[in-house]
Image 1: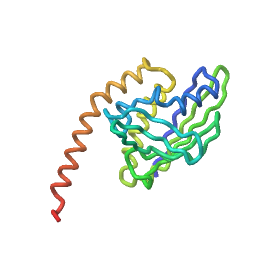
Image 2: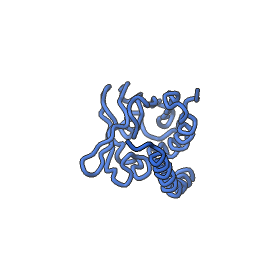
Image 3: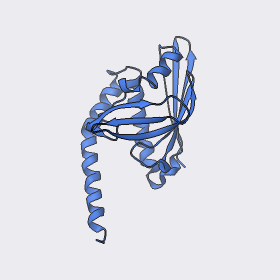
Image 4: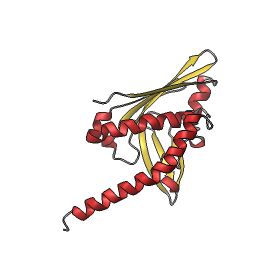
Length: 181
């Protein structure tokens, strides 16, 4: 069983401001170009602020992709949701985000768990999310010029096309091996 990914950072905003930016302001900071289902066709992302609400990516041409469903909604202190961008909901992991007042601001803590639903893919996916959340949360905090954001942004710009080509080649090999009906 894979341990949860835990990330936290502190910003100079109130809990209300931090929660608002993370939820209703998500389209202003989420890196859709590198972290989306629609990739270059991704237009926006939104969170429906209620238990049962969905996290929805809008894709050009009127398509949408459901990334997850809210399981807890407690503004401005906590939200939790299932997480399965690009996958069926039965492969959803779990995320909880809390906002704690600290001297001078707010501490955000994100815990991403339930990796076992991914079976053999759990370890590699967890490793990728550990890096990905470090990058994404620094963007949420407005740290666009931190060494981590710049470094991971560069790595992702180089690695993403390579990984997509590798995945496409793997799919082509699998289709070639499939018996024709």
